[in-house]
Image (cartoon, rainbow, N blue to C red):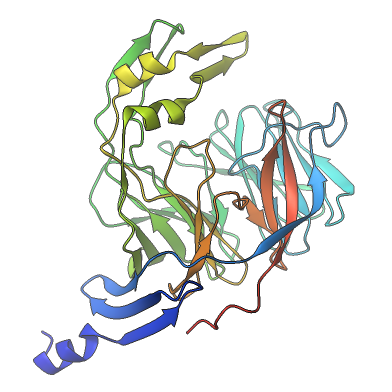
Length: 392
């Protein structure tokens, strides 16, 4: 049982002021709680005058290693030598480029044999260059070493549906997935590899058959908060779940810190719901594709009361955390930046490219879409404005 003196000592560990470009005062408070340290960042957005200079573009070619044209989360990764790995799902392969964009090797091909891919969905690499691709059909991670030689496949538990996974600094597989259950994380082991799972309550869903597309699907309400997570350089994990602005830091299965901003979730409207779906949801299968009418999908799924405050996370090599703010999925959204201790650094404007990966020296690897809806990978050099006030 804690003493009164101890409680008084830990209520306010620090109260740190910082001035934004507009003169606003940003207060950061660290305090102890039963679930670890809470870092409260109070105040309005602090604009960051950072510039992003494109230095390399990959993809969108009609043939060859750069003939991939769909790029998204879990598709690009960079190893400790700066080699860029791209999962080309349509071609069932991984293409590897050096830091200058020259093609080094191609891994995998369509099939169910050793080193082959049937239904690839996500990619991760270790700093040493070990490559892993989760294959839905094979229920495992197909792997190659840094020279491109095949490694034994890592079998995954039956409940894991992907898409994202990562490697810890020790090379073990790291997962954070949604599943019904208690509110605290659980720790499972598969063979010699540790798989960490943060449990998360799922919404109630009903199977609905759509008239505009001959398919039945079980989908949550629009804007239902999906779990987002990213691995830190030391193997810990930062997680966002729920609608509120709260980033939880886990070391193993222990919640050690909670980083927060007083940014309220935005109430949803019919206009936002239609903007979220755009022209509708397109479903593709081996023999064709169809698009579900957006109004039919809104009627079938319903809409959550608020847009989650955060809809994506990324972690730079120095432990800086980038939090992509809430809003319709296909529209530009602002990005908040925190240092590795949870202190709010500032906010980047909506047009800023959100990282899919980082190079070892901190360049941002992001997606760029052209007027024909073809996506490419772009590497940006980040130029930080040194005239900003120093961070506490």
